[in-house]
Length: 566
Image (cartoon, rainbow, N blue to C red):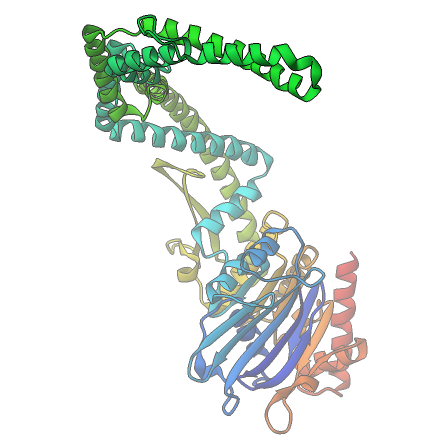
C-alpha cells in the first residue's frame, strides 16, 4: 500500500507531498492544477516511460519518491533483498528521477536498481488505469492468471495437478533427449570400458603384486653379488675352515669374554662390560647363522628372472593406461564396471522413460481438457458480470467476453490462450480491450473488470484516471459506488472531476496551484468534512459558497455515507 508520494519538478508540480491512506482516496482540483501529474508521477515511479519534456522548466530533473508498506517475507520483499535493497520496518522506499536531458535513474530500498525492476515489482504493487497507461490486465498472461483465480478452487486443484504432471513431463523429455543425443558418445565410452576391463581381466593382476615383483627382480638380478657378500660376511664372523690362522669375529669375541670372565668379580664396572660382551656374542651368533642360511638360499635363476621381468612389463602397460600402481588399476576396473552397467542400462532406462512420457501426456491431456472446461464456464460468468457492470457505468451497449482458445501444444498452464475482448455496441466485432474502447471508456471497462475480479485478483493499490470521462449523473454515482466497493479490499486512488465520484471517497485530497502557477507542498490539502462539502460545491456549481451547491454537496456526501454503511 502506498503511504506517501513526493513529486518534485514534474509538470506544474514544483514540490508536493501526497499523504495517502487505506480505502478510497479522491484527488480533485481545478483544470490545470496538476491532478493528472499525480498519475504521471505514479506511472514514472513504477517503471513507466521517462519523458524529459515532463520535467519542469528550470528544475533540471523530475523526482518521484514513494513510501510503500510491504509485507516482510513476501515476493516483493524477497526481490528487493535480492537486488541488495532493504525494508525499514516493513516500509519500502522507491525513487525515480528523470533529467531534462532524458537520463533516468532509480533506487529501491536504498540501492540503485534498473528501471525494469520497478516495472517488474509494479505487477504486485499497483494497477494503474489511465487514458495512456493501462498496465496490468492488458497482458495476456495476467488475464489468464486472473481468470483462473476467479474460476475458484476446482480450477486451482486441476491446475496444480496439471502443473505437477507438466513439470515431470519436461524432466522426462529432457532426460530422454540427453540419452538420445549422447547415444553415440555413450556407445564409444562403453566400448572403451569393455576393452579396458577385458585387458585387465586377462592379466589377472593381484593387489600389491607390482611391489613384490620389483623386489624379486632386484634380488635375482644381483644373485651372484648377494651370495658372495653373504659368504664373505659369514667367514668374517666365524672363520674360514681352509685358513691356517683363524682370526674370525666370533673367536676373538670368545677370547675377550673369557679374559673378562676370570676377573669380573674384582670390579663391578668391568662385570658390566663383560655382560654386554655376552649379549653381543649371542647377537653375533644369530647373525652368523642367518647369513649362512641366506648364502645358501641365493641362487641365480635366469628363467625365473625372465618370467618376473615379463610379468612386470605386462603390469607396466596396464599402469600406463589405467593407474600408477596395480591397486589403482584394480580401482579403475571396479569403477569402470559400475559405469558400464549404467551405460548398458540406458536402453532399459529409455524404454521406461518413454512409457512414463506417454502416461504423463495422457494425464496432461485429460487435465488440460478439464482446465479448458472450467475456464470456459468461468469466462461466461465473468463476461456476463462485467457486461452488467458496464450497463451501470453508462456503457449499456458494450459487451465484454473472454475468448478461450485451445491450442495443440501443452504449456505450463494448459493449452488455453485467454484474451479479454469488448464489443462497444451490438453488431460490432469483439476486439481486444485497448482496441475496442476509447481512453475514458477503457478506464471504465477496467473498473468493471477490477470490481468483478476483486478478491480473486488482489493487488494492494489501484490508480484510476479519466475513469469518469464523458459521464455524469446516475452513471457518475455508479462509478463512485463501484470504486468504493473496490476499496473494501484494496487501496484505491482516483483522479476525478466529478463530485458524484469524489463523494464516495474515504479520503479527499485537493490540488491547488499557487499564484506563481506551481503546486507546492502546501498546495496539496487533505479535506475534512466541511472542506469536502465546499470542494464538491465548487465542482458542482463552480462556486464554493453557493448555497444550492452546498446543499447538493451535502446530499451527495450523505448518500455516499449511507451507501458505505449499507
